Length: 235
Image (tube, rainbow, N blue to C red; front, side, top):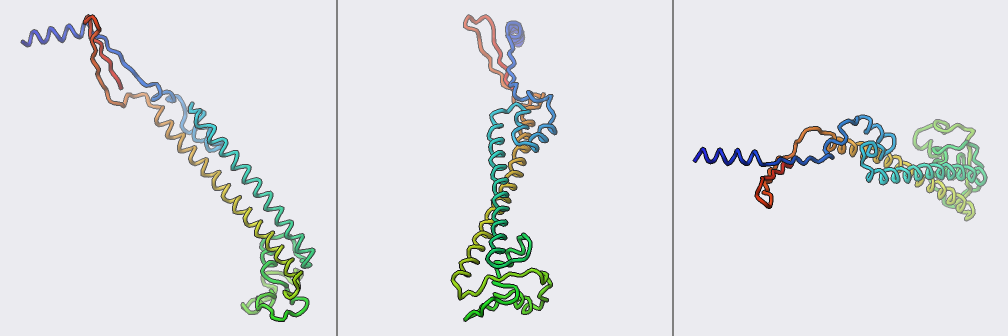
């Protein structure tokens, strides 16, 4: 019985054909440099994928990055224009003597005057005079702003002066919104690069191996005439 089995196995080996099927994707990037791929993605998202021959992922990263750059630059420019507009408006309607400075302009929008509102209000706000607010908080009137910086929006009893300060505050609100958009855009630009870098590492790991790490599967098949045995080996 053993002799017959040995003869059968020898016959199968003699007439069989072994076909090895290998997925070329598992080693197509074996000659590439992962650090170059990551660096390309850090410079411009999608370039690491292009370097690793994954072109279908290039456009989403590139177009996203382009849109974020447009949003970041536009919001920065718009914000700067709102600050300039608010400063000029305060100079014209409140007599502001200070330079264009965001911190100063925020203060100008919080207090109607630096050293007393022109014309006494019928019911003045405790904090509408900047100097009085500093004294109440235990600070000197020139501790944070020099005395040469002055402004006066006028009495809150005057509808025109209230309209002016409201318009000024509106322009500063638009500036703050534009700065939020700018910060979010910059954060998204960084995130887009991080995602592309991680994706480049993932692609490299999946396509740079030279070893057959997948399971081996034998699929014996007989030719139709029964003349030989076909062995398919899949990795």
